[in-house]
Length: 109
Image (cartoon, rainbow, N blue to C red):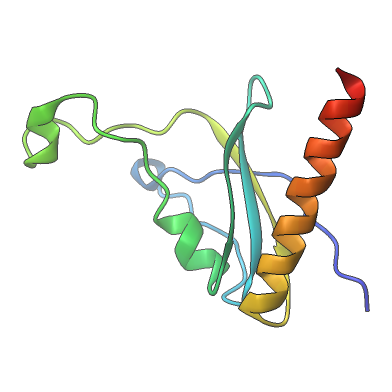
């Protein structure tokens, strides 16, 4: 069976009561800005749901590092996942995808 990327889904916002839909298996995830399509995050993980739930933006001020002020809001994001059987397979697949992107960008330049 050949695994495929899932469809792009809107990244949930807890304040709106939305929920994350991702497998609890190893794999690769890709997150992009909804408006521009620019890459926000890409990585392999042991647990895709847990890795996506931990995504955040760095604090905008020193005070927010110490729990003062409002939490940083994520921009409008979309995500998709690619499940694999093991973390090792996820790492190999991620490395191959990165190599393909670099090769494409070198040829397009």
